[in-house]
Length: 226
Image (tube, rainbow, N blue to C red; front, top):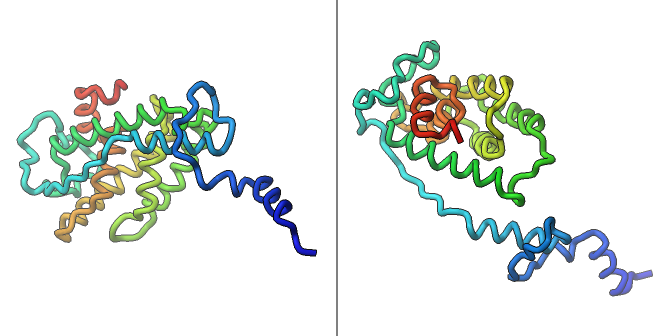
């Protein structure tokens, strides 16, 4: 027996198919503490997406800066064997790092303070577990550019982390920082900078304090105190 139109409509409603698409362009109902329907949830997601700040990408050639011109980021004090493999051309400039750290911290604070983007029930332990899987993918024993998908996941998960981070999460960022410093050196030697490696050095080393020099730099900017 063929299903009637009413039965088909009931099935769509039952499984939420018709409720997901389309969604009208109405403003979210902010009188509700929590969304009471899928449509209301999607309205809030779209509202937040429309109000996110524009992302500006700037291609900066680190070779045009003198890494010794600023005493505010004493990178040469780093003692890790892998870290000291980086040539001056592979190091991020203070100007770039200041802009990145400020941008990331604004995004992190906005994410953890926005109910539709930050879910308190998604515990920090679960975030740490997901972060660990992505770091494992990035630190796999291979050469060449970093895994782009894993790099994006690390950035997205980092935006949801609360401060202060746990010792286990700090160890993950330390491992990631060492791997990305080596990758920066490799990319500089190849004459083709790896943007993902540069961003993750700033993230792990500066925003989460695993590079002594950049951590002090971030503290002076007030980033680590947020």
